[in-house]
Length: 178
Image (cartoon, rainbow, N blue to C red; front, side, top):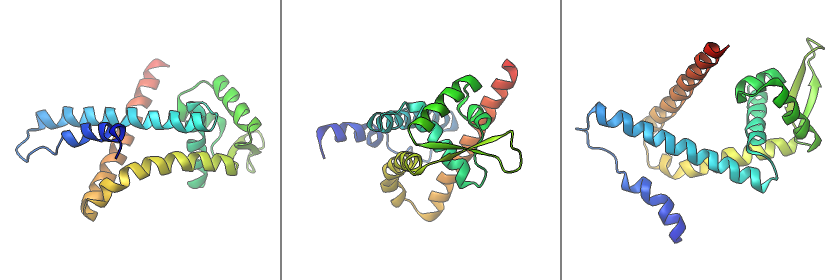
C-alpha cells in the first residue's frame, strides 16, 4: 500500500467502532460526521470520473439519474431531472443539450404524450454512470465482505432510510422557498 493510500485509510481505521457503552449523545453526532465524510468523498469520486471523461460533475450526476430512471422502468423527463438535481429547467436544457451533443443521452418523444420528452442514456452514458457506481461500490465491498448478511441488511436499510429522509428534508425546504 502506498503512503497516500495509507493516509486515506488511516482516518477510517483510527475511528474504531465505539464500545457498546457509547451513548446516543455520542453516537448520533459521530454518525453525522461520518455521513459528511462519506458524502464529501463520494462527491470527489464524481469529480474524478467527470474529469477523466471530460464532463462536468453535474453531467455525471445527470447520467446516473437518467440511467437509474431507465433501470426503474420510467425514463426521466427533463422536469424529473431538474427536480432530482435541484436545477432550473433552463439549466437542465443546457445540460441535456451538452449530453445529447456528446452522445451520452438521447431525447425520445413520450409514446403516451407527444408533448413530453423522455431522456435515455446511450451506451456511453450508461458506461459513465456504471463507472461511478462501480467505483463507489468497490470502495465499500471490502468492508461489506467483513460483515454478516444481517449486518449488510442493516447497512442497506440505514443508507436507504437516510437517503429518503434527506430527500424529504430537501423537498420540504424547496416547498418553503416557493
